Amino acid sequence: MALVKFLLIFLAVFYALRLIGRWVIGSWIRRVQNAYGTPQTRGASREKRMREGEVKVSGRPADSRKINDNIGDYVDYEEIP
Image (cartoon, rainbow, N blue to C red):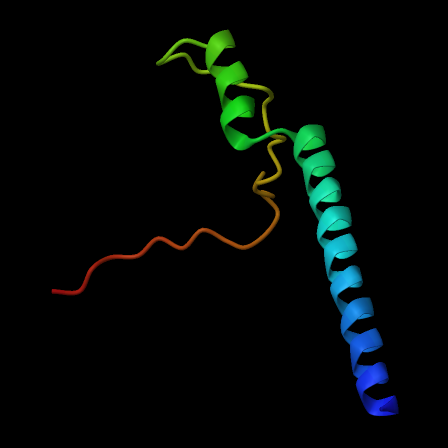
């Protein structure tokens, strides 16, 4: 009899936690979706601002590939036939 009572209480608690967890996780997911929006809505607002074919350059990268003239020597070579 004690085993049956334990199983009934265990199943009731398990079922209740499952329902509560589904509700909590669902509300959390809806809150995150509303905060960040869907990719379709973010892209739609960008499409309204820029027409098709327009290009916007936001900045110019720093020229970090300058060659130091003091490194190495120039070697003139000829091809051997």
